[in-house]
Amino acid sequence: MENKNQNPAEAKNDSAPQRPNALGLDVGTSRIVVSNGSKETRSELNAFVAVPSSEMAENVLRQRNMIYERNCKNLYVYGNDSDFFASFLDTDSRRPMQSGLLNPREEMSQKIMQLIIKRVVPQSRKNESLCFSVPGRGENAQGNLVYHEAVLKSFLQSLGYNAKSLNEGQAVVFSELADENFTGIGISFGGGMCNVSVSLMSMPMISFSIPKGGDYVDRSVAEVMGESNTTKVRIHKEENLDLSRSPQDDMSRALHIFYEDLLQSLITRLRSEFVHSSQLPKVDRPLSIVLAGGTAKPTGFLQKFEKTLRAEENFPIQVAEVRMAKDPLTATAQGCYVAAMSESKS
Image 1 (cartoon, rainbow, N blue to C red):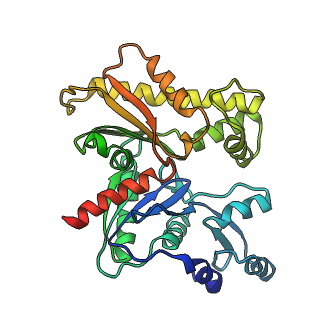
Image 2: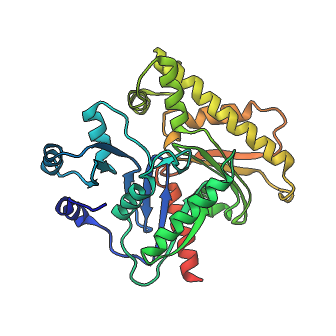
């Protein structure tokens, strides 16, 4: 497979960041985000759209300066351009990842994701440190997780980095809980799953994931509403959803129902992990909880989470406060950067 569209890619990479000493990389189901410690981050949608290869279609892509890859059968528009192209074709974009891991149903998953990562991660020149996010253990995911992590690590090493993985929930801890001595609970509400890490003085004591996230909400709502694709649901969610107010239409009502189901599933699992954990030492003070991720973005999400948590009788630990990350969309990447800097210094 070869890239037949070099000039637009080069033009779009004019603003590529200078090579730093360390990088943090959030490899999410819906978006890939990279941080070099500055306030500005770079991100690309972790998605693509395939169309049959033809000279006419390729001319359209060139005219619109879109990034794409071509093989003998298809043209693949990937990254940020995929969202516009999917809307243009009135279809759903496809994902290299599913439920937080490489999508085994997409034969192009590895190739496309590598192309997307190369859009935001420059080639390393001196073995810089890079930490990348991976999910916690979850239902039927252990073997797939080992494979997913190994594939990513190998690819990032091929770019010249000293690459190490970091639990996604722990990345939220590193990003947001420095003032608490990295002690507390980090939760990343992603597109493919939700990841949780309970950390004591920077050491992850409990980490896990549940196979529900933004995609689960969108897919479930689309099914009960009789929608043929999830894009309409996602757009409605991003533009109209307010979890602090009673829903005013059927789609918002369905979104409320499945958000409540997601939160209840996560809090029930968190309770179970605390009750059954043999690794957690006695906690002598209440723990703060920090929420991050794109699925946590709707208005009222923080209040909905806290209300659901406080409704749990005899919760195993005391909670000091529940707060949102400073930037929910970049917290994981920023936490990975903190870890990468620590690796670089050591």
